[in-house]
Length: 284
Image 1 (cartoon, rainbow, N blue to C red):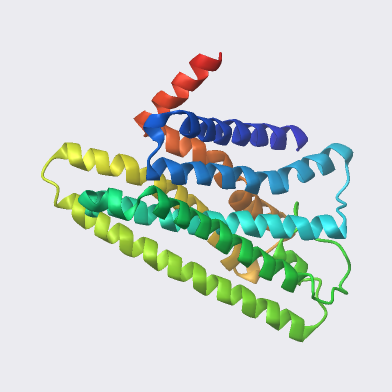
Image 2 (tube, rainbow, N blue to C red):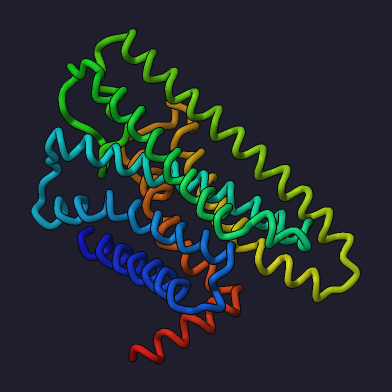
């Protein structure tokens, strides 16, 4: 387990680190799309660094222990990074909408100040969400033991330890409000892509189609991976739940997207591939 987790973690560090460095160092990539991609890579690094190092340590030392403060910190940072990433993916869908449907207004609607504001809003909203969720979760009366059947401290698993029905219902209410917010973002993404596909289908040339899809497909792939694994983790019926299945599903949504996102974005993006190649040949 340790070597498997280490390989995945190093791949995620390398991929996201290379993308961050390439975007920061190559002036040709100083555009809104790549600015948001840089933020996505940083969030992926934070997300996977919240869970895997502790899991690797436990696997290496054959233990499953984590301190109460460590568990609270893990919940806070994981919710922070995962929430901010979802909000950022929503913003990235708006970026693609403006680029394809309103190209003449792209520089006006997505200037440097607007991009910085939107990115700060994603990080800030994720931070606020993490504070509320962590404070509420760890104000519960936990009396059903201290064993969390997961490889990291996950809110649904901590809820199983609660013995106060009112506290439990309060936490469920907060989770439902989060689901509603996530649904609003999802509707915004769907509407954006409906408009994008309508605009693409009206393009007269195949070159325009190719250019539009080459920038949209990576975002759609990342978004689909993020949402599908997250929905399986949180919306699966209790009747099919088991400790081993819960671990596999949580692994899919917390570890796999941050590790695969750099690969997905670099496969179809020639500018990014050129920048990465230039960066690696310069360094090595």
